[in-house]
Image (cartoon, rainbow, N blue to C red; front, side, top):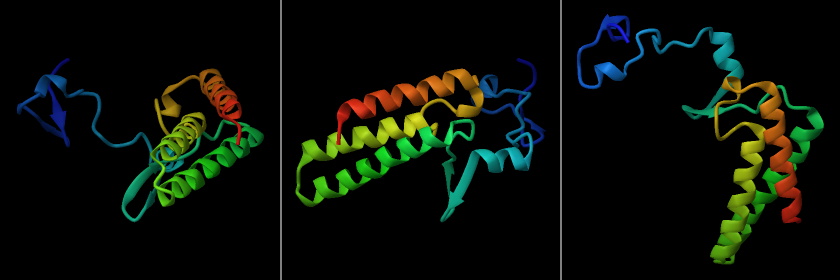
Length: 128
């Protein structure tokens, strides 16, 4: 792997073998980083995959909203099964949007589109 470098300096500490000498920890460009992440209250959140068609994003976000609402309602009713089902809806929607799972920018566009459509199929099968 070569000499490990961390923050521009040689690194010989624990796990030095696991440090990628080609990765300086800095995004390739600030614009690229801004396209991938947004920050709220100091916490970084992954953006929705921009290559997804608008209608697919709208349907996934609709499911996401219903899932979040279901989590709130289930918690108010102290219904653990309802909360679990609603969280599954949220998870599927976020996977489809590219906000969870493998980083969308590391995946081929066709695979990302297939993942979004598969998530929609699963979400639609859940019903309301």
